[in-house]
Image (cartoon, rainbow, N blue to C red; front, side, top):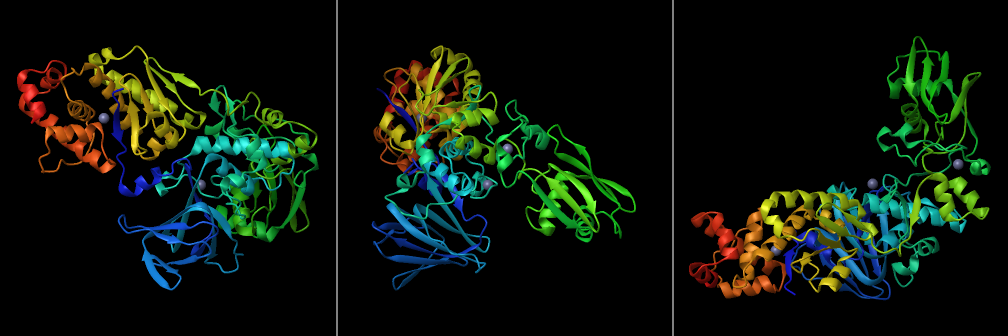
Amino acid sequence: MNKTALAILAVASAALAVQGASPQYSVELFSNHTVKSITAEAINEGVRICGGEIDSPCLILGPGKKISCTAARVLDCRMESSERSFTRLRLDSTAPFRIAPTYARAEEPAKTYCLENAEFDTSNEGMRIVTRVDLESYVSGVLRGEASVLRAPAARQAMAILARTWALRWQGRHSKQGFDFCSLTHCQAFDPPQTAGKGFADNLDPAVRATRGQVLRFHGTLADPYFTACCGGVTEAAGNVWPDRAQPYLISIHDPYCSTSQHASWSRSLSESSLLQVLREALNLPNSGKLAELSVASRDSSGRALTLRVVADGSWTVDANLFRYAIDRRLGWGQIESNLYDIRREGQSWVFTGHGLGHGVGLCQSGAEQMAQLGTSAEKILVTYFPGTEIAAGNDDDPVASSEHFELIYPASQEPWVKQTLETLEAWQKELGSHATVLPPRVRVETLATTEEFMHKTGQPGWMAASSDGLSIILQPLALLARKQILNQTLRHELTHLVVHKLRAKSVPRWVEEGCVLYLTGEQVGVASDSRTSATELEAAITKPGSEAQMRVAYAQALDRVRRLTQLQGEAALWRVLTNPGTEDLRWFQQ
Ligand SMILES: [Zn+2]
Ligand SMILES: [Zn+2]
Ligand SMILES: [Zn+2]
């Protein structure tokens, strides 16, 4: 098999992310705190500590030993009696180690967590801590963060499936900040484990084990897995809250199951003076001594308030969500638990009586808990709240997506990038024009769930982005390529390889193929060094590079040679050299 491959063209710091690639979700921890300092302690195994400087040697923290770091301009760390400063710091181990953060607000109770890896960075007055976990560990952390109210196994399983679906849909949500997810409800609340066990695998929630790999789909695509604490008897249609998120399975349904929840009915009395203050300050209503009327002016199809009518020396219509957020900010969170309420006057106060907690869209956690306690399965719970959806089992064969000229085999975890992948391939196929006629009628492309699987399947090192046998293409996880912003480039590169490889005459060396591909895709591969490498050395470096760096140098040289050829003889020479090299060309190959 004549394998071709492309190095992952990544900056040095990003290259770290490829190592140990099966933990593929990076989560910022303690997102709602300013972390001032941290103490890490090795438990049973040593912890490798590597600094921000690429060539600085890593240290080993022995079992029972601690390192403490304080965030200042850099990270000032103390380990035993020695002190060192780092711009950033990476800790990893084959077994869990403890970390204890200290927050800027001293009254926050300090807890100790167990991690297997962590990266520390200074940011905004404090320290940013990011850990990498595999999908199932991430889902377990979300259950710790989001599902503490759920007890019944089937309800927790339903939540695990939603959390997993969400993770697959939204990986890379914070990619601009250098991680996938924050640990707040902005993404999904995530709590790392507090007990060590033998590793993260030991800390998987039973509901996560029971549903491993399962996701919620609607006609083959990942569903938008919204959930809410309590719907108050009727769920909300997504389109009522977020018009661009309307879905046929996110409609309003009647929910009799959450009626026993503590949030099923609530009542809150707010004084007229505090309401007037909120209306004035947050909503810019003018000064007024008296609130003559406060009522729900319009409701959506689920009965939730859309707008309120305010009469006080004039009358206004106020958005119900803005009103509720303003109350939250001014009077404290959760005064008004949902938009499903009525308002009445009682002396100097206004009384809100309502139902439910939260936006009401999707799965109702209170209802799911009740259904589960009555013996309903996780699957039945999910199709109740998301009508028309189905659970895709994790042990299904990998799905196949097809376009006119391509067939893409992918694990469920890579689905969010499938469409982009096929579109890019089709677009580049068109760009290749008549040259593409040498391709098979439908090119087989496969992507894998993890870098380990990629290495195992192709025999290529983990820093390769893709591998090809000349007929089909095997890609690293699409998510990884997308995160490194080389997905489109990799697809164009590999597809061009198939064409060039097919056209290449036997006497043409591999470095010419590589140079042609790079020339045709117009990739940036850096500047070729001045040192003259022989064609034999170049061919060896291209065929079997020892490292990513060596490959990049070889790429630049191959491209440089091909570019000079086109400058001297024009682009047509490229195709002649490739398919039918003359004596002159054969000599050029050896120079
Ligand atoms: Zn290549
Ligand atoms: Zn977030
Ligand atoms: Zn409900």
